[in-house]
Image (tube, rainbow, N blue to C red):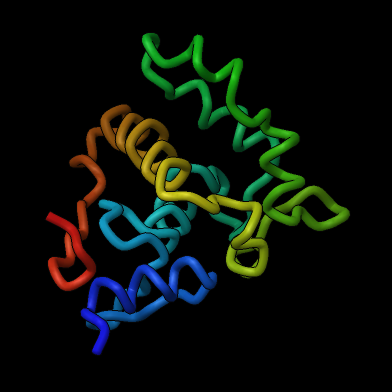
Length: 144
């Protein structure tokens, strides 16, 4: 019989997201999940709150990076690459549905999800006086 953690890891390796306690777990052991990145984008990156993310909104969000991380932005995806990887529509917008449909190229790793939430959303939250983005730890998913 497989342990719970082994079964979760197998699902992730096969690209199958698991739901635990109503929460979708894409990356066991990761502090944030893709749905956190979607929600964070909805609140802090979708600046005009029209339900879409545009390349200009991504460019603005990148300005919230702390000064000590900006040199690393040169080595990360450009806003145009982010748009392409997340399936931007011909009119240059990313929908929440696109974000989920392009899960193999858009926020496809724990590192990218955590980086987006920690560096973009938490800094945006600080800029507007909100508390840091909530951490959703789920012990049953292998988090500590």
